[in-house]
Image (cartoon, rainbow, N blue to C red; front, side):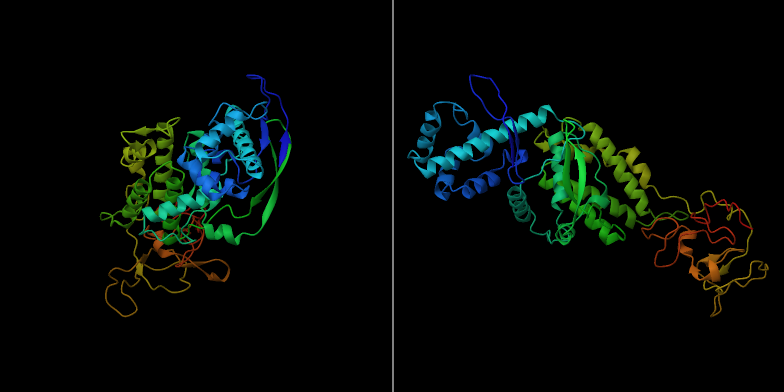
Length: 433
């Protein structure tokens, strides 16, 4: 803990403006009831006295800092102890008086630090940390509010994720938090390593901080992606920025669209499409609620109202429209002969037009994926890399990037000599034979 003594001449008093608080006593704890009670107990104040203070209207650091006209550094502290006598029923003396003086001084230091941070706030300001006691209390209230949500360590948002959303509340401006950054509490617990990082404060001084190595989570697969959406919804509820019900309503809308069957000739909505729609929504919500994040409209949070307003906006819904299967493809216009799956492991590059349209058991290959002429289902050296046939006809719903492999094979064009990271029906086959 570092102290810098400065002078502030106002009503003939001297106080401390620059105090670097510990992880527990941070500016975000100024109005936290749980953090105040925990700190008062830690420095030796009896639990009964803490309860009496709460009954007397002193339940947070900010309330205790301005409960009377006395300020640290003043010559006469009678106003403080007279007020404590009114609240507690007896005037503190001895060691108890020292504990109350210490708590009162810390409350004032935190209040002044909060004012200073608001005046010097910039884009490079540090993220304010929500006190651990406040996190635990809010999590317990959330479990009581939603008993049906099993908040296991894999579904519970990490402390760093909660602090990111709380920082948006303090900045009064929301912005998109990528789903890969919605880490879980389990990841945070298992990450026992932290890397040192050099940063600069507002005065240009170099600071050495430690940052956890776990900064991203996997969203590969529908289950992991859905869990990331839920962790983000819980974090916004804990930070009092948006309601869990509204956030989950938006998430469910996205996954309902993914599960819907498309019209004939159109592809299923992909995971990439709903992620783009999610980003577009947050752009509009951020613009709509800028400087009004903490406000309330007709008893509802402004962010909730904005999310519901833009969930069905054309600019957002546009990204969730099914795409045509043969969009931009020359396969539909060419009278090419097809052969059904399964196909030979290494088909010859020049296949005649008399290819069979029946499967290995005979009969028409109804419902089978048909391979165009001069296409292959394996590529690479020795033809040992399988190609995802569903990807080439626009039917693969695996959440993998182009060129990467899903459970069916690599997402590359199956045209012989092409194999670009583009599906067959959209690829221009530049450089293919």
